[in-house]
Image 1 (tube, rainbow, N blue to C red):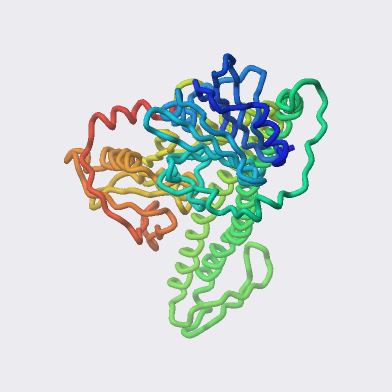
Image 2 (cartoon, rainbow, N blue to C red):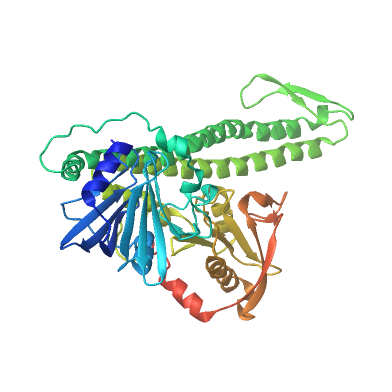
Amino acid sequence: MSLNWKEINLILSELDLEGFQIQKAIQTAYDVLALKLHGKGETKTLLIALTPGGCRLHETFRGVPKNDKPLRFAEFLNSRIVNGWIEEAVQLGDNRIIRLVIHLGVHHYRLYLRLWSNAANLVVTDKDGAVLDAMRRLPKRGEISGGRYAPEETFTEEKRDSPREYEIRELPGEGSFNEKIDLWYAEHGAALSLDSLREQARKTFEGSIGRLRASLERLRTKEADYAAAERLKEYGDIILSNTASIKNGDSWLEAENFYTGDSIRIKLDPKKSPSAQAESYYEQYRKAKNGLEEIQSEIASGEQELNRLETTLTMLLTEKNPFALHKLLKTGGVKPQGGVQTREADRKRPGLSFRRKDWLIIVGRDAAENDALLRGHVKGKDLWLHARDYPGSYVFIKQRSGKTVPLEILLDAGNLAVFYSKARNNGEADLFYTQVKFLRRAKNGPKGLVIPTQEKNIHIKADAKRLKELETCRIEK
C-alpha cells in the first residue's frame, strides 16, 4: 500500500517539519532511510521508504535498525545536510513529490522525495536544481551527480488545480494518521518488502537459469554428435584392412564391417591413397574425441552452476527477513563468512580470484586455467587483459550490471597481468585489453590461445604496494 496525495498532505500537516533540525541520517536498507530530527521541544524519526508497493513518508515510533556497514547515500547525507534546518516541507501539487528545503550555513539544499511505486527516488539538489546525489542513481532520468532535477518546472497550474480523486483511507488503531500508518506498516511492511525483494531475486536468477539450461541443451546435442566419433575410427580400420580392393579414383568402399558383421559403405576421397584416406578418418576421430572431452567438461561445469543457481534461488525465496534478503541479493546469495567472502563457485573456479571493492578479478596461471576460465567462468561483457609480447596469465574483470570498470580496478588487474607473466622480471609491460566477446579462438592453435579484436592498450609499471594490498583481497579456496 503506497500513500496517495491526500494522505501525504495529511502526514505533512501532522509532522509540521518546518523548524526542525536534521541530526542524523540512517539508511537501514537500499530503499529505506530514517532522519533523526529535533525541534520545537521534541525529537522525531522521519521514515522514508522507496519500496515498490510500500512507498511512504511518515513518523515512526519504533526503533530503527542500523545496517552493519554504513551505506553510501546515508554517508552522503550525513556529510551534507546533518545539522541543517528544514525551512519547507511541501507536496508539489497532487504528484506525490515532496520537497524539503534544508538551510545549512550559506547553503540551501533541496530534498525531493518521489513516492511513485515503480519509480520512487530521493534526489538531493542545490538551490538551482543541480543534482548532488540520489538514493537510486538513474542515469537515464538524469538523477545522478551532475544531472538536473527540478520537477516544479514541469508542473502547470491547471494540473495542480485538478487533483485526482482519492480519499484518506480508514486504518485501524488510535492516534494521528502518522501513528496509524506506522502501526499498519509495522504489521504488513515486511511482507511488502519481501514480495518486492523476492521478485527481484526471481528476475535476477531465473534469467540466468533459463539461459544456462538452453546452453546445456545445445551442448548435449553436440555431445550426441561427438559420441558417434568411434564410428570414424572404425572407418579408418576397415579402409586399412581393405587396401587391396581399393582402386585409384574410387569414391566408395563397400566391405564387411568386422566390428558388427554387417555390410558397410564408406565414402572415399578419389584423390587420396587408401592409407591417406584412413589417416583422414583417424584425424577426424581424434578431433571429435577431444571435442567430446571438452564438451563433457563444459556440461559438468554447467550442471554444477545450474545446481548452484537453483539452490541459491530457493534459499533466497525462503528467506523471511527483508534486510537479510537484501544483503544476500547484493552478494549474489552469499552469506558472509568473515574476512573475504567465499562462495561455492569461488572454490570450484580455476586460477586465482581476488575480490576488490565489490569487483571480482580472476587470474588464470597457465594455458589450461586460461582455457577453463574462457569456457566456463567468464561472459561476453567481462574484461580480458594480457601482457603484450609476453607469455603469461589471462586476467579477467567480471562485469557488474550498469557499472563501468573503475580505473583503480583496471590498474589492479593490470598489475596482476604483469606479475603473473614473463614481464614480471622487467617490472613493467604493455598490456592489451578488451571484452571477452571480442576474443576469437586461434584455429588449430594450442589450448587457450585467443586472438583479440577491438583491443585497447595500457602500459603498467608493477606497484609493489598495490600487489601487497591485492594479496589481502585474495579469495582462499
